[in-house]
Image (cartoon, each protein chain N blue to C red):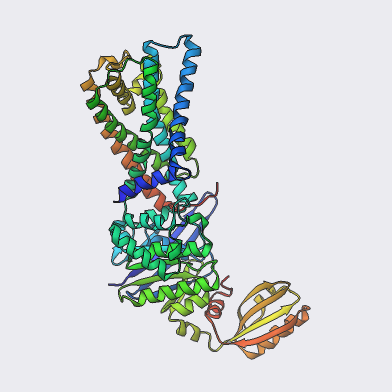
Amino acid sequence: MAIRSSLWLEYQIEANWTSPVIFILYNTLKPVGGSLLLLAMYYVVTGGFLGGEGLYFLYIGNAFYMLVAQTLFSVGWIIHDDREHYQTMKYLYISPLSYFTYLMGRSAMRFLLSLLPLSVLIGLGILLKIPYRIEILLLIGTFFLGWIFVISAGLLLSGVNMLTARHGNSIGQAFSGIFYLFSGVVFPIHVLPGWASTAALGLPSTYWFSLVRRSVLGKEVDSIMSGFTTGDVAVRLIIISVLFFVISYLTFRLADYLARKKGIIDMSTTY
Amino acid sequence: MDAITCEHVDRIFESKNRMVKALNDVTITVKKGELFGLLGPNGAGKTTLIKILTTLLLPTSGEAHVYGYDVTKDETKIRPIINMVSGGEFSGYGLLTVHENLWMFSQFYGIPGKEANKRIETLMERLGIVHMGDRKIRTLSTGERQKVSIIRAFMTDPRVVFLDEPTLGLDVETARLIRRFIQEWLAQDSQRTVLLTTHYMMEADELCSRIAIINEGKIVALDTPGNLKNMVKKEISLNIEVFPEIRVDWLNTLEGVMGFNSRDAGGNLNLRVVVDNDATVGEVLAGISQRGGKISYLNKEEPTLEDVFLKLTGRGLE
């Protein structure tokens, strides 16, 4: 019941400031517009528009990155919003509900809400002649693993936010920027400097974006990631995601303990 | 087993430039069924103690237990049996309605839907806001919001409720309704316990079976309201209105003055002084006169908890 209520709360906070139609338009057009802007930049830089492996790589990577960015951006605000704006955090915190479960529910809804603009972008991809070869089971599994990875990242971010005041926005953006740069979202990891491409192989997001392309385009373009079979990528993603989750959970618990010790669970800074 | 026990609890807040001892060797025991008051001025440590007991804050040293559970280790056992209300804040999701806010919190406590709705309805009716279920939280007045907070806390049927200045900033009528509600709730079940912090001496006097007076993090007295007031039975409490307003810091050095509290009253001065003998009364009045003050009202009054506080700390509650 608690996780259902958390899902519901996230939806209400995101959506009930306006009518459902306007919310759906806002929730869809804003990220879709952002993605199309990137496409326009690609056009200017390359001088071509349709076709080409580079376009497919960028388009799909960017479309699915929206799930990561939007969820992390939203999770980045939850603690600060609850603590300082709504002043409900202490009441949530002292309830039998695990605050961790609550954050899971809230981030899951944000993840789900991001699926709508993603669907629109995939649909627009047909107009751009993206050669889709969707493997539906692999795609469903990829979504699930993506959710685990994004939740882990959100948990880590929440841990940091528990100890800081009013920087959720910038920390969330910086945090999701790491995945943007080092996970082969818009350019393959083989173009990164050696140390960076090595670091990229330690990130769960790198394997997740590779799995995304395999499940949507039926292939991987990046020369480094092409060296792995789909099974290899899935196994590596599961292992690194589990490790990432454990690290994130422990970090969150530590931050939770430190926040209780410092007395900042119900901090109000008016920053 | 007692509802709450604190043994030698200290809490120190450290920042770059300073160290504040918010709680200093606090030892109290609250029995089940008791409405226990913590009376002290702003910054005395009342909220800090509540935060420790509600598992929001760790003590620096000492031990605190709620229903036998250690607040530092057994938070998952404590949280289902407690709840809290803080006064003077605007908590709640403004975009949600009153009913949605309350229903959501009921779900976080695992109360089945039907039962939750029933409890919400009953409490809203009791506090006179049954017609406000569909109103968004942001449209409520301070008093209405506080009633919603009270319902949020009491609908979970906690065994221990922590009320941190629950009537702060409320109008007389609303404050009275909330006080009556608390008393009735407590009377319904002998296992229910309330720890109330307040700096309103009347509220503490009216509601509490026992009161701990806290000043600068230290418990300076703990007893029933009657016994506490007996502490100042031999002293003389004076309520004086002086015009125009004059400085009164000279009272600090006047022998026989046990404590005083002064308040600005629109150009006049309301002065409450506790002295230990008749001769000092004359000296106080003469001192006012010498400093250009004229006395428009003078009354020797029955001792109050504020007088106890004045005697114990030398300063007023506000």
